[in-house]
Length: 322
Image (cartoon, one colour):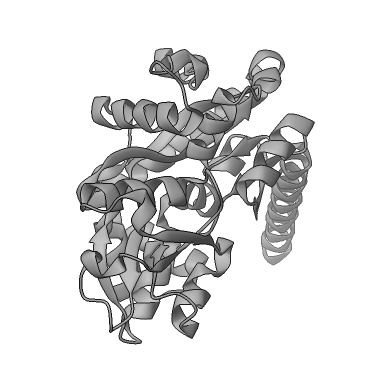
């Protein structure tokens, strides 16, 4: 009896080991099938949350991708799209303006219709009127930060000739903190950190304007020849966006990990643009209208550009039908 029991236990152990090795082999085989996916962000901020969620919660991996995420300023990002070194670029405002300048790129998905950018000033500046004659920290010429900054100031009564924008790139928060500029257009992550140092908010772009802020920009060549590769990318980001709007706790946890911030800070920046997420992947009518108006002004066009000059939602429409 004891011999039979021992044999049974040994046989059961063998089956368990076979199962474990089989699971390991399956996981290894699956990992080998992951396709490299190269996505660039213009910066690390709450605007990029859909990418963070898709990465950290395993959504990209579930669709067979090894998502490799990096940060590139707009000119480098658009150049990498065109060379094929980059699959997607999250700075869709810069992608749109590049398209109107003749670059064969398009916005394939919109994740956010409210801007994350916040105009922050030092303690000596208490109102936007005091920015007349001052230098303000921006990002790059024709970058979305500068476009949003100019629009917010216009709506607050300042003309473009009444101030100067210095293009400080990703160092604009440092420029404000060091006193190089009295005010700067920052993202919410940079803002929460500077608020603790005595700086304060002059205006929130999300309160003033609707504007497509982040998503997926792609090259026309890739949209034509790599549709099977890109379609699940679009689906992944849509799934991530739905999680953002319905599961705050999970999203806050992702933001804490990705941005190395506290739970309080993550909740602050989550709440700042909660209403702006585009669960259908498209711009709202108001966001689209302003985007086209700003692009017309930026490109010096006589007429409003047509949406198809900027957007190609064909992959998004295919995903919606599935």
